[in-house]
Image (cartoon, rainbow, N blue to C red; front, side):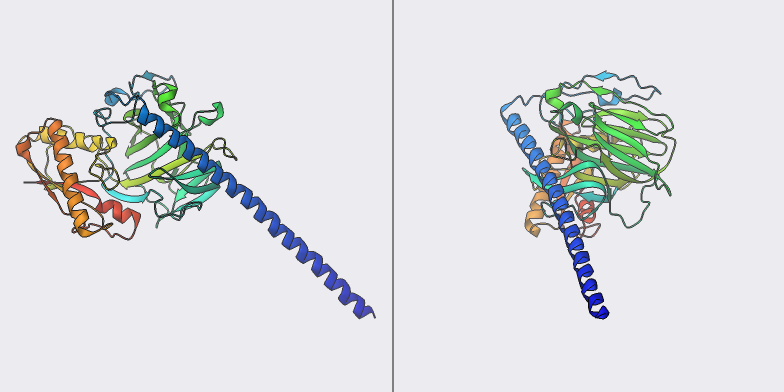
Length: 415
């Protein structure tokens, strides 16, 4: 009889334990579902804001004028904000970037535009270290929407991958509808072996950039664009490091210049302040990290037989040059002016997406577009020829985003 009672009690306790575990799983699933819905809702909110901005741009003022970003640097050791006139009242143009001097690194280490990820899921090339995030599509752009003070890191083959020279680029959507939404995006720089302590570059914060935990913290110049022209817009962020100096750009303007950052970055993560609901999400896209990068080629003698560039970018499947390409184009113009006897064959190269003939035609059109732009910038037509190679001369694999990004390039070959 005692044995029978013991068996009944064991079955009853096991049943309670199983029910508790089942209820815990249901509770966790509900909690995760609520979180996922919040992230999806945030993505939809951002998509609507982006769509509204694009619709407004189509019917609004499309004029813009150039700015002098070379003189837009703050190298002193204080936190006094300085206004700079960008005179930008419309979408970015080649003219508005005419003084841009950012040149991406020579070899792409990491690239992701989220186009290979499933909508509604966290992207596969990233680690989610804190918060929540999903990929959503808006117009022709894939967007990573993040919530809850997020921190993300690129999945790399080695833990420490940054060297003495590297560049970082990404697009960020600046939400400014509410006072608490203007905190920007943080780039966390980690030293070798660093586990917890980080150095922070906060970009888009109040239309500027600032550092935190650096040896000497600096606040950059503040863009004088109106709120209408800055908030609720996509912005291109670029960071160039060449030991020991670092420069930070928002769109065409160099907002922060540091002669000596006081440490050596080994790897990085991204994050910032975002809400736990859909009121103030963080939206990012088009990441690229590259090694190398030459900050200043003015007046230098050209000794290489060719120059391989990854900074001349085009609209998707088109030969339309993107404004941020002007940094590389300005470098080429400076080289040619410093070396008046040099002539270049401009070679266009693509990855293997699409048919071979389409890639061949596209690469030729892009090479021609670069030639036309250089002529507009003062280079004599007799010094330039073009040739498109399509996907016939890869310099990397076509199996990874980084490989494809390395294969999409413009080369300047001495003739």
